Image (cartoon, rainbow, N blue to C red; front, top):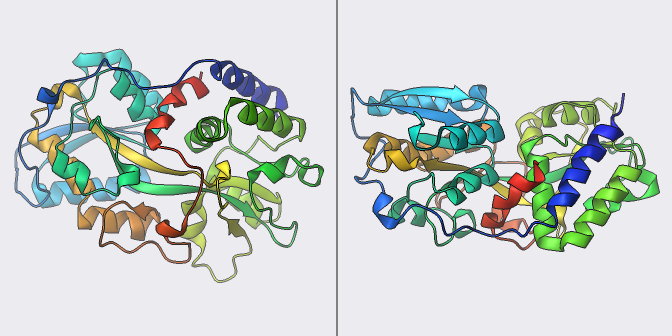
Length: 344
């Protein structure tokens, strides 16, 4: 069954948020909150431990965390959950949080913590190793770990490929477009739409999409891909890596559209990591951040999760366009810190 009322509620909350001005807060940690030490992933720190709050799925991250412990001797207690939920928990816990590191599925959740002054500043040499589009700007209190592109997945046996998301409100796509409105990737896409195209354009697109009877009873991006692949749904909006993981199957039918130009559907977002303010001097926390950005960590993400690396010297995943070939909307990822209003 479809749930236009539920989606309408989400849209109304979003439309209200369009009236709230976005922008960074000056209330944040000072430069003295920068972690000390080099935190190299290959250094043996046996006996040390840390607590990681992860907004990323356990099945994706646990093998890398286990390898980190094996390589460094640092034990990691991981609490898994939705990025928004983990971020809300960190806000509630404040300076008393047991977490040393927060690894988010998208930039918005760490941005909220940054604005609340709950993250420590990272060393410049850590930030500088990352592609500039995945850096946090002047405030070095989080850093991108992997890149992920929003895409349109479609079944060519059922429908012709659109060029971008703005076409999806046309009559030919009525009742045929699958979305997951509660997914962090979709919410970041909506936030990026507002920031890059303006409030009125974003509002109009959402209203037109609602009127076009989208399919909203699918629980996850992976389920959207499966439905499109099986011919149950003609078209959907997902992140690229869901398809890239399965592309090695020779009989795959579904195809991707990477929207070009300034189409908001081509948003390139990032997973992001930050160290909590109370762990500013914690070498183990910094070691984990550096490990995620190391050659071993970045290669893991390319080969196992099919996300884009954010450091030089690591090849992009196969079967998809190179990161440098992607266009997407012209925006700074720090602008996605207004995701909190989209989730309201």
